[in-house]
Length: 406
Image 1 (cartoon, helix red, strand yellow):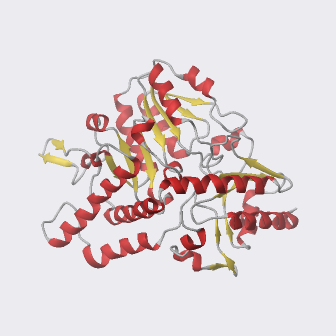
Image 2 (cartoon, helix red, strand yellow; image 1 turned 180 degrees about the vertical axis):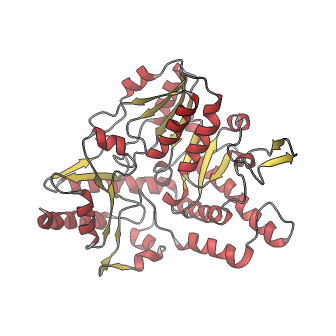
Image 3 (cartoon, rainbow, N blue to C red; image 1 turned 45 degrees about the vertical axis):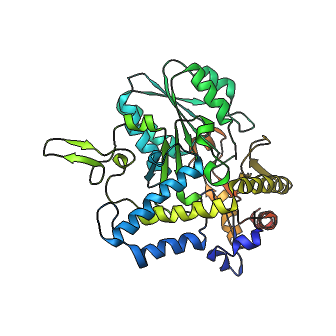
């Protein structure tokens, strides 16, 4: 991978000074920064090609439609899907889970079970809760052990003939935990006929993903966490499953024929994409895929692993800090932290005076914070534009801040 100093030149935001200091951006778990190639690709559409997709035979519409549909191909290759028809564009991961919950759960029977884990993001809890209330389903949670890893023995005991859906985080946005997806999939398929859904919001931006090799059934992806713009995401699903599912949103472009009393649906993926899609955002996501592909995800993953080890050793040397981070050798570069007697928000505000951007709160993992009896944490996530210097800056800023706050 290119040197981080060279990568930062591709991101205009790093030219800014924050409180007179260089920006140390460590909040990529919430959203990533955007390289020029993404910004320029979207601007180019508005300047040169802008027209609604799938609707016109004129040049502008044809050009934009071609750019938009080409992103399906790019993403298909990026995650090694079987077909671009398996790539559904959404507004983001949250809409992806809502789509799956609403489409899949209506075909389940009262008393059927959905299996989640204790460390899931709210986006992978709330849609299932809403569907469970509507259809009389039962939600069960896999324990997370004291080392912030999934309890595989507990997972096995929770799998029953009633388990119809298992939906799990691929990389934790609080502890960096990376579950063994392939082994989990084998366990699920050996004991049940359940569908296995993966939350790829943190996983896909940081690691090589091959959906065919993993064996999963669905994957939800957030574009803005992988250098793309906001308002765009992807649901990948096996073609044979998508073809059986009913659409959730109705309107233009997702239909084949419409009558006053009935309608028939367009083939996948379009039957899940009602109305004018976020085509400019999708084109921006395609540019993000190009950027990451040029770096190669193998190198991105290698960088994440190296940076995580350095960050862990650096942060653990800070006196009085509590770190929520898996003890596994295989983990993401995400660290949620707390200090007894000091609120996470106060630390975050102090760090900002040093030009350090971290997230404070429960990070949409409130039930797990509650389990740990912690109100809030502050979180640092490393990405391709971060290096050892950034975590040194963070550590020094934490130590200086605590001298004042204590």
